[in-house]
Image (cartoon, rainbow, N blue to C red; front, side):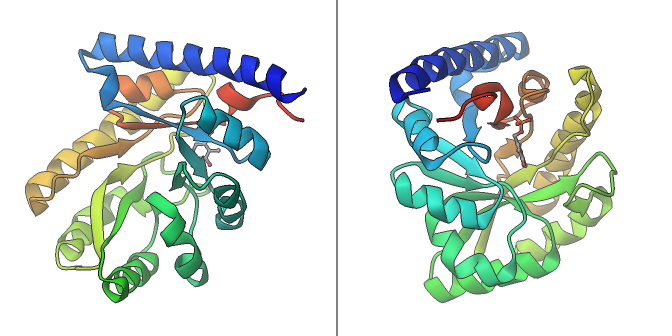
Length: 233
Ligand SMILES: *Cc1c(COP(=O)(O)O)cnc(C)c1O
């Protein structure tokens, strides 16, 4: 596919995803502007990532730091979201490129990010990843660890916890994701009461289940396959 074909396919897919987000917002009585579409570019080239940003999806997500470095170099004007595990030895190079890290999944990473934020004199914005599905293959804090982590983060000057992120277990039926998403929202609500933090953000919903995510209160949906399936250059 050449760039003009890519542009026309992507324009259509973006419009369709945005319409589906807007419909889900309407069902939930929410304003469509309260949901940010993050295009997950992990399966496509830096060129395609740049095109999707030019077409107006300026929030882009990568799950691997090295891929993010490469693509952020090609599209520095995008807001980059890290959505996968961050090794501590990659913090210094990755965090300056990133708008929001969605996937803080351990105490050790949290402490290293706090040290980084204190050193640079500006807190690192992040979401805590929660394993709501109970699957061992999925990363994140267990739900029952979150209150303790919440008590801890209020005293960390180097990080700003802006909310929670989760991945539902894959299922053919998107409705199967609903309990995990409503659990994340309820966990956020109780953590907010406990800590006094605003915790405005909920990152939940992927290609298969983003409408359910929006109905349950997602402020970020992370979409790869629906936008990029079958696209190459
Ligand atoms: C790959 C990935 C996505 C996008 O998944 P799709 O099903 O392709 O939309 C979202 N979140 C995370 C953490 C991912 O790794």
